Length: 54
Image 1 (tube, one colour):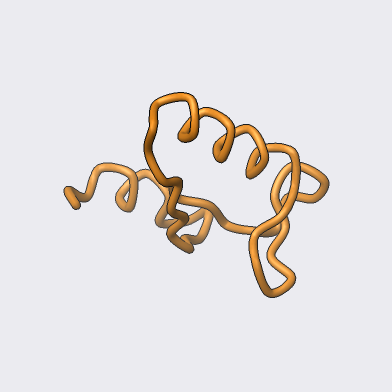
Image 2 (cartoon, one colour):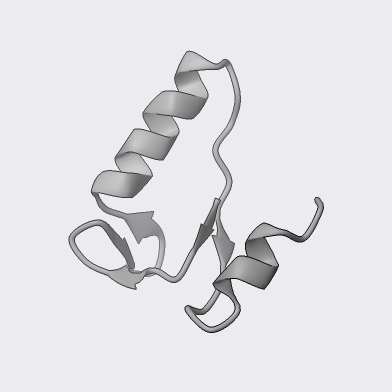
């Protein structure tokens, strides 16, 4: 999941990612038997980062 980490209370990085969106991502990943991982991005490059394979 790409995140800027600067949109409290939804997502905040201090130093780990925390917030409501992070909790939902962990719960969704757990429901799918997967591990959530987070990738730092900026608002300016968000769409390009989302479209990058990998």
